[in-house]
Image (cartoon, rainbow over all chains, first blue to last red; front, side, top):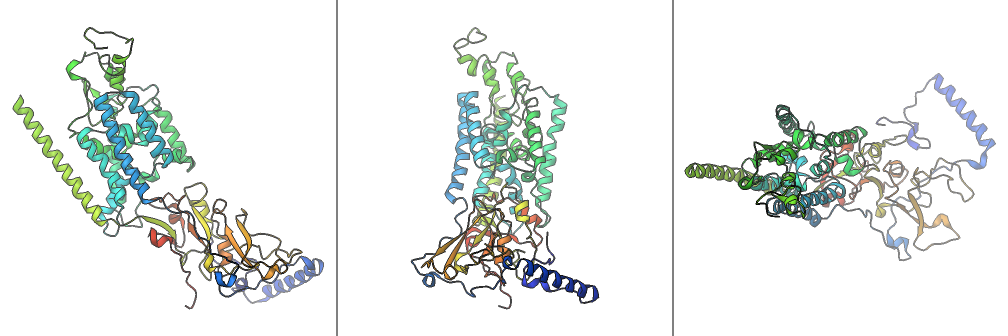
Length: 347
Length: 206
């Protein structure tokens, strides 16, 4: 912050603002004397009095020798078709997730899809652009007549919501890099008491409200909270403010024991997705036609999304653990030597 | 039972349709309003490093320190067509340093040694002071401290070197961290095409 004029050594303009007066005159005398002494003692090592050599820039024909002016700046913004590709990949990844979870009922491939999304949308695209942060951009674009967002951003925001409206939160399970990084660290999840779970779940609505509040403010006071306080984006970029990196680390360590804390309690986009998935035409189901009431699926769900042997669609994060743990479904049933062979189970 | 189920199904369909219509309407509104991509760029008419009349000792350096990317996305760029190609460039040499045996200042200005000096055109090895030189700034090394831009501006230089955003590193944050910190509000959002064009520094009196 050097807003004020400070004398740069050797600058012609630095001589202004000198106060005339006795102390200044004394200082000037002293300086003259010192410079005289110095110039005598080290005369050859003096700086040249700088004069600008040309008044106009010479062009290639003046320079001659076949000189061509090189391109000024090589670094270009990301190409438009690559941005469109991101949206296409987002859509494809969501379709694949829906197909794997609803049709194949397979956990392994959901994890593979999520890991792929984490690698691409997370570590390669460095967590940007994402639908979570775009909530605020969309809000600003809807309310401020002087602000608009590219079509790519609109598509990124709308597509996961549209999918949630038909199939539930497939975006959370297979595409979202923030979800995927937490999904991969779930180690030994404890069941949070339902009341606490519900109460903490309200936080995301508060966060959503705050995000919208800060987005509808006038341009100068506007603050893009979600992006600024995204706990994982620093990890994706492998750099960032130390406190945000620590917060991200804390979420990951906490996430080993409490399944996907950011998604369940804070994610403002999760709030929108859960509203949409309430209306889902088809979602994750825990085999109601052939269930055993064994409750293995409910025990396996780290997100408390199975209540009274039914999936809670708006809480289900499409991880497909319930299938993997079901003796009549998923990987156990398809395994060569199932842990429990049940009468009537197709192996 | 079945009548109840169909009623639920109907209500569900109606609600889903309503939400879809809302989403579609919102999307339509946003798409109609949409313009091309917007990027951050330095407004050189406001930037302390290139604005005339500002004498800033060691430069403002906020572009280097505030960017969320480790090595800042802001780089000094030499607009070659405006460059004087001087043999003693005030942005390449530290012109306050002592003169060496070749008659050139002995020290370079750039703390990261990012500027290179190459003779161009018809090179006369006998008379190096009369050759034209190209000063290229290595985008990989430069951290956007702006020292060279500060020296290149008039009256010392022609103002060819300015700070610019390097787009392959800029993450295009919603609210650029440098724009928050910039005391001159010199960080502005522009449509790509405009941002990539050469910027004209406002000359005093013209």
